[in-house]
Length: 485
Ligand code: NAI
Ligand code: CS2
Image (cartoon, rainbow, N blue to C red; front, side, top):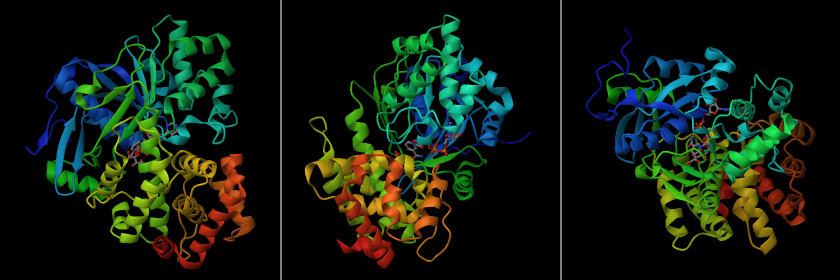
């Protein structure tokens, strides 16, 4: 028998689920069983189960990659270790909220759809990355030219995209007279509930107007703000956890101790009481979401691009450099905070300082390369929206411009030593063609800004400021330019 966390000798340092897992049923189907979901929604659900003894279990689904993880989860009864790594010590928790794990390669598309259609399923939740919504960067609406959407239009009952799965599951529920459910995005997407709603209804409308109307009138799409820094697992992080745990858990995830979840209370078929586990249910999530996307994620992207170019492999390494630390604090307080309208009592100064502390956690090996991925999907909500604010208000936005220029320099595909960068982005072919045409020259700037399709970004002042930052990066290198102000 393979010894694993379901049947091995677990060291007493780890806590085990203290509720009856046999009682749990699939009430949540989660699409995108990645690192973040396991360390966030699955953890909140685990603590909720500890406190309430309810029966809300999660069935995990990975639609694309992740076959191995799904198999490994099943091999260990869907138990998984979460290592919460503070600056000084680690707390190990074995969580039990996940009860099943599926992949289309193992159960086929129909197996997944039939699970989503089970009558007791009340929530489909999502962490499918920004690009998983198949939306157009400029309009935020469903991109009908997206390759997956095109395939799903031809073959809608055997979908490939997350949006295609959701619409087909909703169609089956509608046809069978089953209750509607809630579709809850937990991705770092601006107004993630609205974007999901637009994409789902947009695709449903392309299939059947009546279905689109049923979805519009019955299905709810709450917005959420999700926060916990969860780096991708590495052989080292898994080994370190195994040493403490006494058993190797291939599904284990290390993350920071901090976790936050603000949820719009809009669930048509019920929801778990995640508030007992620390979540906040509110009427309007958007201010919290915008704050987090601009202050945390905007700074993360700044550190990712300028940090990588400056030779820093991890966020905490870049934070050790006082120039980067100061630059990121200035970015937060001088260029992101002023764009926000927060409920009374929100202390953005304190929030910024807490972020500085979280980014400086050197026991969390969060790679700049990981955060640098998919910049074309991330920059609009993290930086460009703030630039739009500053342009309208005649304010300075140097660090935002530098972050955007850092992204451009990064996606050129060569670092400051001329070494290749492994650029991951759905628009990577477009970047390659722009750089083939312009080389590293500053002429690439307007062409790269055009990928966002936002006419405001053609503003001559903005193009000048970004071009200046980009030229400085070429002339002096990232470390030097970050230090200039
Ligand atoms: P991950 O790479 O571990 O997992 C990504 C998951 O998304 C995988 O299950 C993958 O199969 C799925 N996926 C990828 N592309 C897809 C597509 N086109 N359609 C459907 N599914 C797709 O990444 P991780 O760390 O779990 O992050 C996922 C998302 O969670 C992020 O993009 C972000 O929006 C959100 N998030 C992540 C945080 C973190 O610190 N890792 C914190 C807060 C939010
Ligand atoms: C990061 C986020 O990968 C990224 O782009 O900025 O995943 C970040 O770690 C989380 O949003 C923190 O909640």
